[in-house]
Length: 115
Length: 115
Image 1: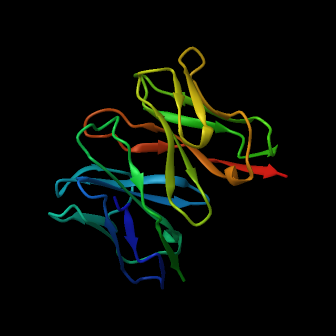
Image 2: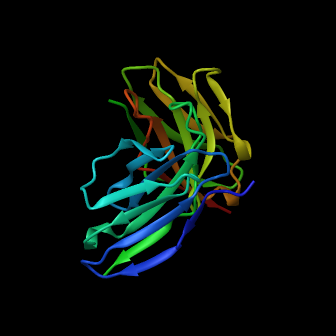
C-alpha cells in the first residue's frame, strides 16, 4: 500500500505571497491532519479533516486554511506569508473512525521557506 | 488538558548500550500515548502506541515502552543501540474531549549513537 504523499517537497516563497500544499492519504483513510514543525515551537497541530469536514482545529491564525476533497486528498493554504511561517508542514492520515486510538501515518513533509 | 514532557533534548549512547528515552505525561483521563521517530529530512514513523491494553508495549526495530500510571511515565527503551537508531524521537499524547484527538507532541529527544 502506498504511504502518505505530499507535494511539493520543497517550496521557496517571499513574504506576502500565498502557498498551497497538497497531501494524498493512504488509500481507504478518511482523516487527514496537518502539523507544523519548527525548531522553536516543535510540532503543532493545525487542523484535521474527516469526510470533507473540518473536525478539529488548532490555535493558528485564519491565514492558515485547509480543505478536503471527496477522494480524501487534502490541501492547506497559507495566505500573506510571514517569515515565521517557514517550517516543515507534515500531513498525517488515519482511518478516522476511532478518534483516540487510530494510528496517524505521516508523510515526508513539505519544507516551506519564506524569504 | 493533556501534555507530555520529554526529559533530555539530547541523549548519546555507545553502540550496543541500552537506550532509554524519557517521557512523562499529564492527563486527567486515561491517556493514549505514542512514540514516533524522525530521521533527517523525513516525516514521522510510528514506533509504538499505548491504548490501554497491555502496559508493556513492543514496537518496531526492537523498541518497547512501559506505561506506568503511578509515575505518569511512558519511557522508551531498547536493549542494544545500533548506529541506525540515530534520529529524533517524539513522545505524543492524544488530545481528549469533544472532536479532538489530535496528537500533542513533546519537544523531542535527539539520539546519537557512538561507534
